[in-house]
Amino acid sequence: MTQVKMCGLRRMEDIEAVNRLMPDYIGFVFAPGSRRFISPEEAAALRQALRPGIRVVGVFVDEDAETVARLLADGVIDIAQLHGHEDEAAIARLKALAGKPVIRAFRVRGTEDLRAAEASAADMVLLDAGAGDGKTFDWSLLSSVSRPYFLAGGLTPENAAEAVRRFRPFAVDVSSGIETGGFKDYNKMRAFIRAVREGDSV
Image (cartoon, rainbow, N blue to C red; front, top):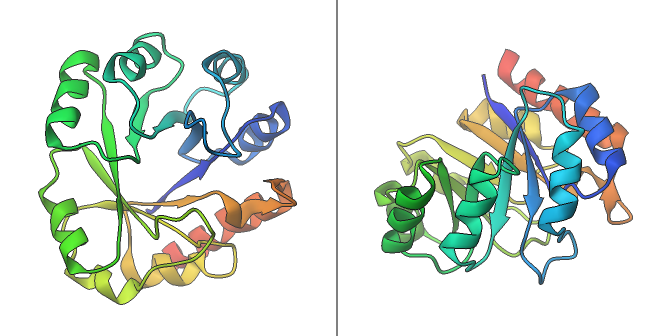
């Protein structure tokens, strides 16, 4: 069954919504340039209100490994997701420091990006359109991918069922596709999970 990650949560209302919907993962964005950025202190408070069983992913862009490892060690997050220019050495260093899973995000523009994802030493890979603008990449490229992956970029309640049905990704990752006016929308969040389950059932 395809798992669900809802990313970019930043308000207590968002936590209340996921506590009702129970996705497999949520994401906190620690990249200062993002409009969804939250501080470690805010994330810790939100984590306290989260129901057990939902894993927390911290999203980072070129952050110091020590900073990421501290958030993992403190239990603010369970998994680190790297979205910057981190190379294989940086992944290995973080895994050695933290002993926790690492997701490496890859912007997919062609088959060479998928080859890099296949070869990555990260525990999991995330395949994304990369710009955070709610657009998909060329899904036809996915047929060449053999390792499990998170599918991200442009997913919505309207296309999630098709994505799951066609590609059976390990997980789907959504952020802007479940927002209205830049904030998470409970009805869209619920519709997204329903769409994923619909795709799973075919």
